[in-house]
Length: 371
Image 1 (cartoon, one colour):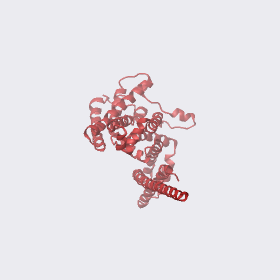
Image 2 (tube, rainbow, N blue to C red):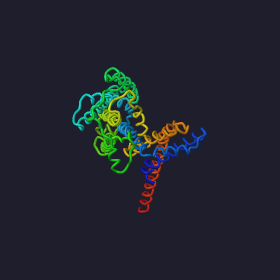
Image 3 (cartoon, rainbow, N blue to C red):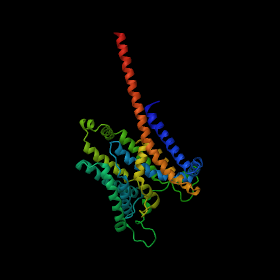
Image 4 (cartoon, rainbow, N blue to C red):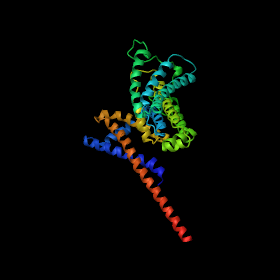
């Protein structure tokens, strides 16, 4: 069995089996039939409405994972996606509500604002690492706290609209700045969609982001330098790659993608930045990136899995089953993936070394016979 098949298919499958096995044990200890709980989740989660909501939930997780994965490829652990996307969404919502132009240009300008804000915010962590040697884990964690506090202050004191209603939010973005849903396409293919369940149109942009990530990392010169710096920084520097420049570029690109995490929700659902704007996608993206091994297809499946579990868990409340079982599964999946990947990677390495040793021995024996 090939090494890629082991690490890309077998490893996540084993991790999922371990996670669901431990979750089933936890349910049994609580006196709940795990087959009943998982069956209810599967039945509820596979309805058309649930699958649409699961995909909508998966979109920001996937974009967040892309932002994290760019840093991972160079050995940078960017935990600052959470703060970057919240701050970017706030600025994008405020700026997008100031004007109304051609729909395509309006949406593009809002996305550009979000990308710039995200890039600048994560770029601060890059500058701190390059100029002062501050580890990105420490700086991005601190920047998350600053971003969350700063966005709360700006929202309440600068960007909040003066409305008499109960909704506390920024001004509504004009319709020219909305991204239409993909429901007409679903209906074209015969899928009946209940009113209110709209498949976010940002899904198309997310797909192109995945393609862009693949090209950037695997097909471009920058991607080669990125991967080389991640595998062996000293060798990369000796070959002429500027490590400081790569750190800054990587953090700026990671931040630019991070700024787009909240755009699916902002432009496809709320159309303004409310006080309860969704949080947690930045940290969830780290788990998805680990689960998908920084591969865009793997991360897409990981995001869909998390989106499906989060949606299907809602049915458990009606059967007195603790919804937290899904959190247990997600946490164990990430831990199991890391452990299983490491075990399989070492197994593959031992096989490669053994094969090389065998080939060398055979070559020596052949040489002795010829002599």
